[in-house]
Image 1 (cartoon, helix red, strand yellow):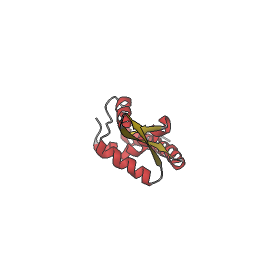
Image 2 (image 1 turned 90 degrees about the vertical axis):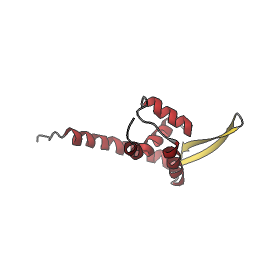
Image 3 (image 1 turned 30 degrees about the vertical axis):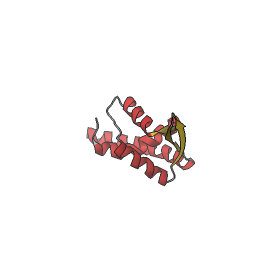
Image 4 (image 1 turned 180 degrees about the vertical axis):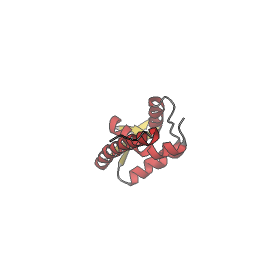
Amino acid sequence: MYSRELVKGTLQTVILRLLRERGRMYGYEMTQMVKQLSQGKYQLTEGSLYPTLHKLEKEGLLGTEREQIGGRTRKYYRLTEKGVVAAGSRVEEFRDFLQTMQKLLDLKPEIK
């Protein structure tokens, strides 16, 4: 499992990407999908997921809808138009960041 600091720094990007790919999801569904895709290495806790979802909603990147399922209300999250744009730019930014980190961690100077 990855450290809390790594998860915290990537959580918004992961959520935006999931929703861009899946359309709409509820919180528990996100936790299970991330756990499955990462083979258990990246685990979302309720304590980190829901505050992040609320923050993204407040920023206008997410919208919500409620649905009754078996007598319970389930809150689904989806990207707004602004969220679709943000998802694309954050994923691209993160890819660039990964390339930079790879160079920094390999510490092999480029020969020019």
